[in-house]
Image: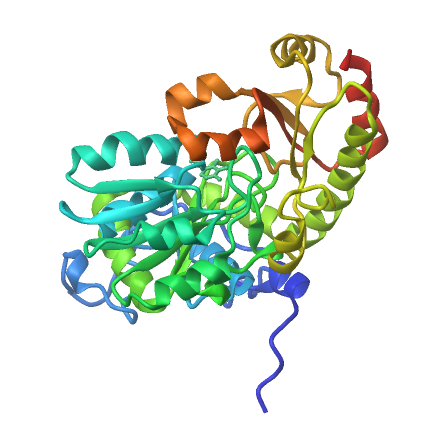
Length: 399
Ligand SMILES: *Cc1c(COP(=O)(O)O)cnc(C)c1O
């Protein structure tokens, strides 16, 4: 009889980390070697690679990075995974390896700024047509499909406004078009909350820099999917584009990933406490957090997220002035970009400037964005400190 699959917390600790057969070492080895000695003369091209090939060169694959990839596969329920040097390298790897000149991609109109700008500026320069839609309404995605559509790129919850996309609904729409693949940036959700591959996505992408690494000390990215899709991605995006993850960062991120499920529990608990404190504060306007009943998509959040994660936003009357105060006077929370670390981080995101730089929305799309973000938001990544200290820190700077 096959033993039952380990539960999530057990998989997070053990997957990819069996003891070293040579030494019995219990913790993962850090293999920094760039090249590997072979005892058979073989091919030198990426096209000679197959699943049985041993290690050849670290840009192809590396034992420490492979251990992290195995752990991520166990967490996402994926057949295969591939790590990159950053989340952006992972996103660019998927976009450029799947899309060719003349192809069309549908992208969520609100997402990580780097991806938003790559979609709006770089893809068109390569002859790839991109349509940006408010994917929180699945019909917008369906209406944007064209004969040359090859990919739907989603992000849920979407940076920075924490607006959700119904992955199951879009999975159903895409399934009617066999040529269309669905890729989901699941960085805000983590595999503890949402497993997009089970909901019809073909690729799930993470910035490992965020919750999965979890400690703000290693930049990395990953893409998970089917064995065949990931093998093709490795050949093109890792071996030919070259943006691979350093084994040292893989080793650090693996150590972080082992505690992902228990960290996410504590992150959610803290975010709930901070969100409720902010919602009750007389100087705070709108608070958006998927775990609050007041989130416009709270029902979808309950259906799609097993954990509400710890990204929240709030609005106040004079955001820029409070941002100045925070940068100078916060004691516990760091006024800094990025997210998903054990340390709490907060940053002001001004709507008009984001419209100029990253999102460039108009009409209904802008109205939907403003419904979540008004003139601007404080985006907070609630960390693992005592939530009472976080609330005190915020209370001290709020007007
Ligand atoms: C940070 C982030 C990225 C980019 O990841 P890097 O590791 O910084 O390159 C992509 N998507 C989301 C949602 C992110 O938060």
